[in-house]
Image (cartoon, rainbow, N blue to C red; front, side, top):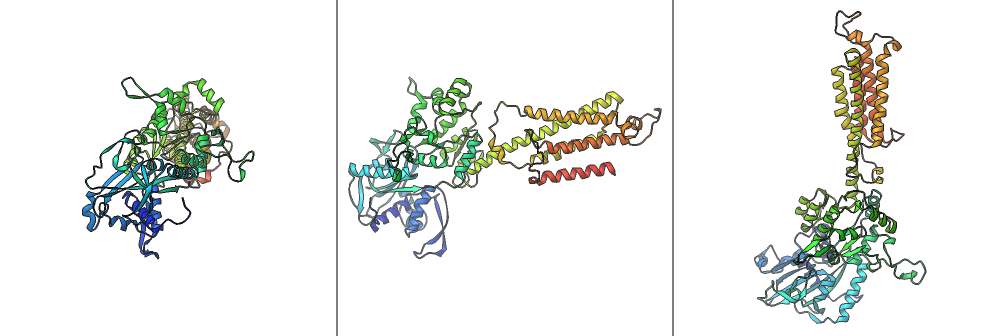
Length: 611
């Protein structure tokens, strides 16, 4: 509560608390060969839980090496002479039910000291005293009154409104022989289960506000998601006001989501039209839910006491839901399951009402769910979603195994890139189908007409093999190598029930095939008289008794083959477009593979015909 620097003894205790009560997986990379004035290696990087990384960075900035503190503490050290005492310590890992983690280490003179950190409102509620001063191991404390507790919680609320993640740090001295598994009869965890006695009656040490600023590219990435018809929701374990602040900065929450704008602050206080305070209490109903309330609404209790998921009630909530705060991994699984099973799109009247009253558009097909996660407990939700994204840096191996896609840079903007490439793959398949079916239609009609008219196709077998190579292998490679364009993210998603071949594609294929057939038929029947060469059926018909028979290749049929192939090559350029675009050459130079294949096939065609 003071703007002055805390006493050195208090800082020393906080350094011990943070250094000991953090996971081994959270690591700061320090360059021990390049040490600073304090004798500690310079910071070069980190890995692990971002919240714990921030805490360990604080220790480093205070001039201490967290590794030395760990390795010099009985019950925490896992290397050196003190490693033999590691089993005497007690780690109580973080869980979403408790919303805190603790680590008990051996204390000089006997007994244990338990260090805890966790959600501010949870830890503060379990503190009966507060740290005042005194050396480590002989601290001076005083009772934590209700006014002090309210003041700390108010400060935590102010931090949360600024988008900070708040943690409370506390400790407790425990006598030897204490049962760490003993459950409390009066204190419960966040999920209603009995709390551990060792994590009650603690001494409050500090309140920490950790700011995790959004990456600069995130708001723009979320905006592009909305333009592409991808709805983004925030599911987090942070407090409601922290979640609201982050969601508003990211663009997940807009001004129209707030029903009660509250009072302006700062210079705009008291002015009409001042900037409203974007806090949880000002949001419209169901825009933000806490995990506990969410579970209460979407589960109904049966007569036998079992809880059953209520899909009908869930469908009333999810169109409005933008932020799920203080959530557990099970809430993510429930959300993924409910959205996946929702048939709200079939209720046309409800969809119209949502559009008219709240400007909420429901996708006219079953929802396609993408879920992100990094922890082991996120694995079921990642598996249940249609597409699971795991973090490549901070994610656990179990989360990566359960996911469909791993984000190597842990960046939300990469999800937009994945969506763009996914749509590009779909568009590439459409382009190839459009090209191939056009070739098939015109080739089959040409062969059939030749067989019916003169019992001989104007396209020889070896020529058809070249056409097949052209349209199956080279064309598929050329069209599949088209790079994604920003326009792909400005189109709505494709319904599951939509046909891959659209009406516009049918128009393109039939129109182009009709043109090609018309040209080939003109050359087939009128070509000899117009261009002055012998008809191919007279030159190539294998019948020595046929009048005028000459045993040689026909210029007529070669002319038809050459024209047919060149029409396919130019149609390959047309097939790059699916929506009837006028400028078919747009962006062609951005695809060197396409240009190279087109050039090579053109040269080979000239060589085959002329030589």
